[in-house]
Image 1: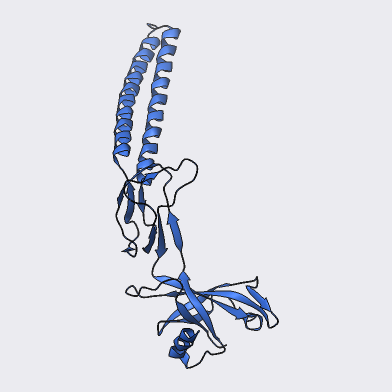
Image 2: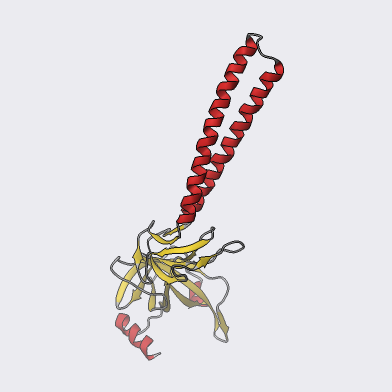
Length: 254
């Protein structure tokens, strides 16, 4: 409590009526996983690393996926040649049929063979697309600029996702955070989301706006109810804040 008092005094000398005690939190935190099973091949990051969007964070062992890809590509090539030859044979059969040199039965057999090889090619091509997707899913990439919060796996560990995806890593979005506080029922009446606010953290003030005003009370006693309020604010790239830090949420006077 003493630490919080000193913290607030850094900003205003005393906690103002429109200044709310708050805690910092992530705007977006996700646990990343994969829909395919395999062995962890590489963990390319450490806890605390800042990574740009698209960075490959974790890779499953690629040998199995490369083998499946090579087999699928070979199958597509083989069925493609079979399909092309069946089409050429169908063209020859139709030409002979037009010249009355081929029976209806023989023409029909050529059409069936062309349809069969075309279906085999389409099936092989669909399997190739699925194998390519599985290979893509075997690499976990950052969906946004973020900081690695936790890593749940190590190289050599098996990942089995038959019924439920296993979380591999948690990532928190950087660039902005939110301050979460409480406000009493008398003061909450005039608030609206989108209202500009200021957030004080570590002796600095940041511009932000209200993004959530609760409707269900988080606390209720003889003094009345209090409701959760959240405000998002931008932070510079060189500043690293953590969730749970003490903050001041300053509401602008009307």
